[in-house]
Image (tube, rainbow, N blue to C red; front, side, top):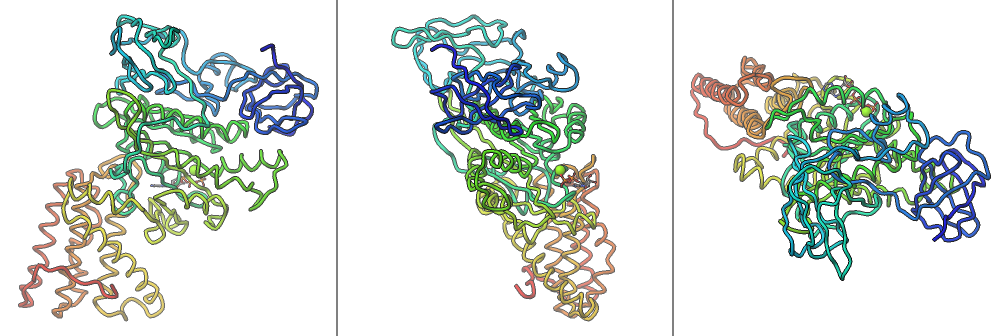
Length: 601
Ligand SMILES: Nc1ncnc2c1ncn2[C@@H]1O[C@H](COP(=O)(O)OP(=O)(O)OP(=O)(O)O)[C@@H](O)[C@H]1O
Ligand SMILES: [Mg+2]
C-alpha cells in the first residue's frame, strides 16, 4: 500500500474535515497538517471524512495534508506505566515537559513507554512449550509494589522457539520467540491494544467482594463491589474530588488508574504532590508506585478528553489481566460528556437532550460496562477486577439532567452528594436517603463471614432508623422537638449519634481517615445496641432526658477519632451498656437483651 494522503477541506475547532483517501476507515489514526497533529477518524461519508484532532488545531489551513496510518488508536502496554502521568492520548507529560518546556507542543511524538530503560526480565516459560493468548511468559518487578506479568497478547499463540535468559531488556527487545504455522513471532515486553475495544477475558466472575475504601458511609451503607461500577454525583464543591482522591489513596485495591478529566490542573498537581508522600499501609512504599494518572485538564484539547476515558480503562484492563484488582476513577465524567457533546455538535449531529447527541447513553454504558471481575485469559490462572468510579457534576446540582440520569442506569452504586450537607460541613456529604447500592446484599455475605454474623441486622436497622428520623425531623420542625413523644425523641438522638459518630468522617490525616471494617461494625453495634436498650428503658417509663444526659453520648460521637482504634470503641461499648444497666437498676426494672422496635418501622 502506498502512502495514503489526503488534504484538509475545513476546520471546525477540534474537528477537521478532509478528503482524498479513498479507503479511509472509521477509527483510523491520521496525522493532520504540516505539523502532523495526531487525530482519529470519527466519521466517514461519501465525500469527506471527519477527524477529531487531539492537539490544538489553531493555525491549521485547508489544503494542508492528512496522512492515514492504517492503525487504530492504541494504548501502549508494558512495564513503565506505573507512577507515571500521561495525557489523554498517552503522551507522558513529564517527558514532553523535558523536551519542549512546560506546555505540550503540537506534533511532538514521544513514546508512552520509555525506550531506553532496561527492565529485569525473568522468563517463566521454556523452549517447546505451547502458549496461548494471555499466558504469562515472564515477570518484571515494575515497582517495588507491583510485579508486572508479561503476557502473550490476546490474539497470538504458538510454540516457544526461543527464550531470552533472565536479564535486563528494553520493552522493544524480543524476550520470547513463538513459532506458529512456520512463522516466527517475536514477543517483547510491550504490546498494544485498541483503546475503544474491551480486552478479552476467559470468564466473568460475580462481583461479591466489597472494595473497601475505609469511609464508613460507603463501606457499611453503600458499598461498591470489586468489579462493580459506582457514580458520585454532586453539585459544585460537594466533595466529589476529595472523596475520589481519598479512595485512590486508601482503598484496598492494588492498582489505581486516575483520570482527571476536564478538571482544574492545579487539583491534579496537588494530588501528584500528595501521592509520593503517602505510604501503602501494607508495604510502606509510596502509593504513587501503584498508580497511573491520566491528566486531561480543562486547558487541554477537548478531543483528548474524549479519548482519555478509553485510554484509562484499557490500561486498567491490562493490569486486571495480569491478575490485579484495579480501581479506575474518572473525575469528572460530566466534563467528558461535554467533550462528546462539543464534538457531536461540530459533526452536525442532531442534539436530543440539552445538546447531547442521541448516542450519549451508549457511550456512558460502554464505559461503565468495561468494569468487572474476571478470570483472565491464559496460564497461570489469574483473577482480576476493574472497579469503575465516576464523578458526575450536574449543573446546579440538579440530578435531573441527561448525564446523571443515564449514568444511574448503568451503575450499581450511587453516592449522592448533597449540597445542604456540604454547606453544613457534614463530610463526606453522602445523602443516606438518596444513595443506593445494588451490591449491598451480596457483599453483606463477606461481612458476615469476615467481620460479624449479625452485621446485616445492624446495617438495616441503622438505615431504617435514619429514614424514620428524617420523617420525625420534618414533624419536629413544625411542632418543636420537645413536643414529640419520648420514643421519637430517642430516635432523633440515636440518629444524631449515627450521623455525627458514624457517617461523618474526616478526610484529613489521623486515626479516622481509614476505618477498618471491624471498627465500622463495632461503632454501629454500639449505637444500635444503645438505642435498643434505651428504647426499652423508655418503654419502662424512664424519661428520654435522663438518657440524653449521659456523658457517654458525646463520647459515642467522638470515639472514632480515638488513637487506640477498635480497643477504644469496645471499651466505650462496655461503659455505655453498664450505664444503661445502672439506670435500669435505679428505676427497679430489668433490661432484656431483645432488640427494640423503631417506631413507624
Ligand atoms: N471529606 C471531606 N472532608 C472535609 N472537607 C471536605 C470533604 N470533602 C469536601 N470537603 C471540602 O469541600 C471542598 C470542595 O470539595 P471538592 O473539590 O472535592 O468538591 P467537588 O465536588 O469536586 O467540586 P467541583 O464541582 O468544583 O469539582 C474541599 O476543598 C473541602 O474544603
Ligand atoms: Mg471536583
